[in-house]
Image 1 (cartoon, rainbow, N blue to C red):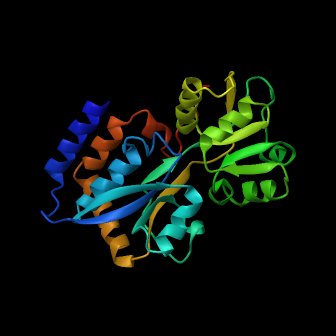
Image 2: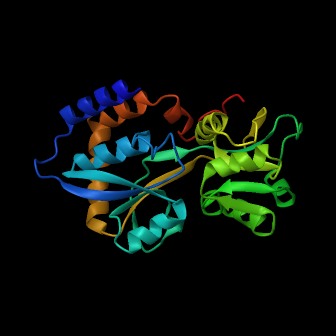
Length: 259
């Protein structure tokens, strides 16, 4: 895969050439959203899309990884110039770019525990562990359901979600499927005592559209111009095709994957 990423970067640079003295922008990413943005090796479809879009308008990026809830704080404080994987409800005082990616979240439960499936309202009675800011991103109905549930928890570290599910401390978790599978591999390779078991992926949510947040409206407009350019010149397609089926799942209206 590293060879593929290097080839992809080379192809992108043939089409998008920044100035010799490109300004560097610090971009905040969640620290627990691999493989969309992997803090360990700095790769991921989100990083590559944002890097290419900003290169197209004369910038380089330095990814900065932090808990999701801190990204808007870091942006307001001037610690970063941009923050990824956000939506307007996260901070109405920022400028939000055009949508650059979608996530598809699922309710993940022990296999066979809910043979008739689950409704959103059922989550009010269960021990639910979601990712940080899920109550902001999954719509007002989900937010209302979990607001009245004292056993609802959000975790910045999504490995902790899996540990709670497999350790019997949660009835279900809410996560994007590829992030879950990445964390599952981490858990299997760790020395933690929790041992994985088979799970069901229950589809209750529409794809979530994500944008990049900027404090500088001009930078926001430039990013949108760069995103349009890499889409027009085929760079965006090259990036996303390198990460299939990751990106295929993250498109609006994508069919539910098999468990």
